[in-house]
Image (cartoon, rainbow, N blue to C red; front, side, top):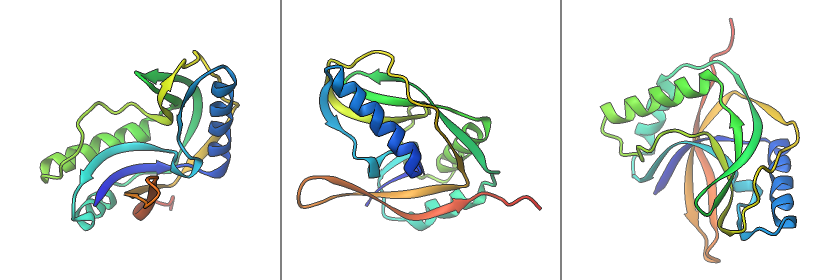
Length: 170
């Protein structure tokens, strides 16, 4: 099964990001838009791996407090349009520790540097510069292990198969 660790977004964040997609299209961009239900921030892409239980164990070993993410600008990687997020140290620290434990325990993952973003469109042409999102933020209290499946219609569907939850204040 194809797996990745991610921060899933709430409906208000998805709505703000969909507005960014609409603005990009209005400005002449063409491409394959990411469906709102598939929008997320990838912390570690694992790929094909048959032991989600091992990944969940590692995710749950890493304590973290709730933190807030905020939308912040847009940009592109080649033909990919992305929405930016302000990355709090809690997210950076969690991601660094997660990847460190994956490496120590032999869990395969994509070792590209962590660049927090949300993919808005792929295979694009005419990406407009500097699309600014409306002010939107959300509290993150859960990190999700996601599974990616391709449907019969060719579309990709993401489904949470487990999570790690923040440590409550005592």
